[in-house]
Length: 382
Image 1 (cartoon, rainbow, N blue to C red):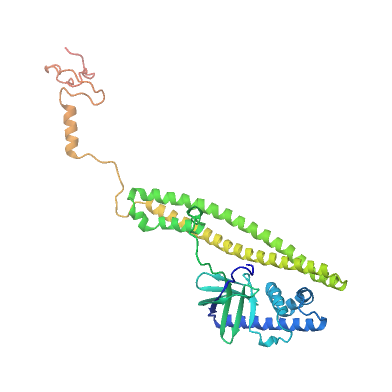
Image 2 (cartoon, helix red, strand yellow; image 1 turned 120 degrees about the horizontal axis):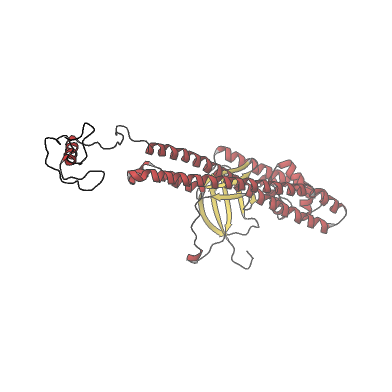
C-alpha cells in the first residue's frame, strides 16, 4: 500500500497464553534485546550509523549464532534498529516487529506465533480498532508484564462488493469426508431404512466404494511423499547457497565493493524468503501426509466393518428355519391320485386323452382299462 492511499487501521489482539507459552514469548523478547545489544556494538565499532546493508553484512550471522532468532525476525529487527535513535536502551524495548510468516491466525480462536522453540498456539481476544497503522512491519508484538498484545495493520474496506455467483465454488470432497460418508451409509440406521432384501446390495456397493477410496488414498499418499522429497531437496540447495553468502559479503566489504555487498544482501533476503515459503509448504505437506494416513487407516477400518456386515447379511437370522422345497399335503396327494386313476383322464406324461375303456369280460379282467395295454405274459386268451 502506497502512502497516497489510506493507511490501514490498527487491530489489537490480546493473547491469552498458558504459562509455558508466556515463558516462550518472554524468552523471544530476551533474545531480541540481545540482538539489539549486538547491533549497537557493531554500529559503534564500525561507525555504521543507520546503514542497513552494512548492519546486515556485519551482524546478521553473528546475531543468528548467538541468539537463535528466526531469520526473518533478525532481518526485521535490523531494519527496525536502523530507524531507532542512537541512544536506544535495549533493556527498555518491549515490542518486536513481526510479519505474516512469524504469526498467523488459526480460525476465530487461536493465533500461532513463532518462538525460539517452534510454533506456539494460544487463544486470543479481539480488543478492537484504533488509529492508523504507520509501521513498516506487518505487526508488532508487545510484552508488558503478563500482558501480551499483538497489534496488526489491517486494511478497512468501507464496502464489500457482492460475490459473483460464477466464482462461488463448492469445496471438493476430501478422502476423509468420503470415508465418513461411506461409514455413515454403513450405519445401522441407514441399513434399517431400506428393505431387508436391499441391505446386502447397499453393503456390497459400499465395499466397492471403500476399495476405490483406498486406492485413491494410496495414490495421494505417494504424491505427498514425492512432493515432500522435492521440497526437502530444494531447501537443502537454498541452505547451501545461504551458508556461502556471509563469506562473500565480508570479501565484498573488505574490497570496498558496496555494490556487490548490496546485491549479496538482496540475494540473502530472497533466499530467506524462499526458505520460509518452503518451510511453510513443508508444514502443509506434513499436515496433508497425516490426513492421508488417517484417511487410509479409516478406510481400512470401514472396509473391515463392511465385510463384517456383509457376512451378517448373508447369514440367516437365528431361529429362522432354512427354506426347503414345499411338501404336498395328504389331501393334495389323494386328489392327484384320484385324478390319475379316474377313466377318461389323460396320462400326465402324454397330455392326450386316453381311449374309452371297454366293458370288462371274464377273460380280460386282468387287463388295464386306462392304458389299454395287453396283459402281461401269463398266457394267451383262449
